[in-house]
Image (cartoon, rainbow, N blue to C red; front, side, top):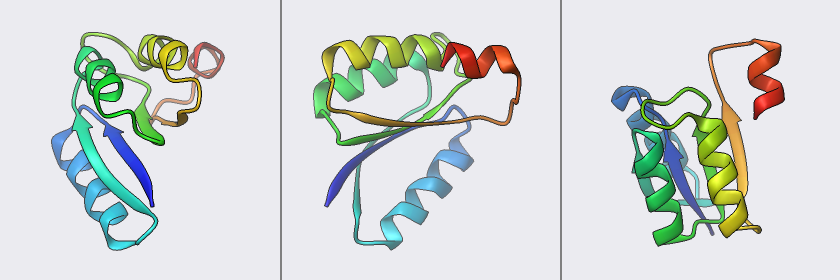
Length: 93
């Protein structure tokens, strides 16, 4: 079972995603965060296998979160999602 952290600033969306992942048996949701700094601290503390990461977050954006956790957790797999479709965001992530 893969350990999963969900990072999304909208609480209802974050909880919905957690519920969806809990329905299957492949993922164990080990943490949730609603802003960037909290996400970095959570990932470093629980060391998940997978992080579902929103690109736009308050405090520290998803790109900076990704840079910080990738350096410390090189085996972590990150799936970035966003409602924004700008080429700049894609390049930054």
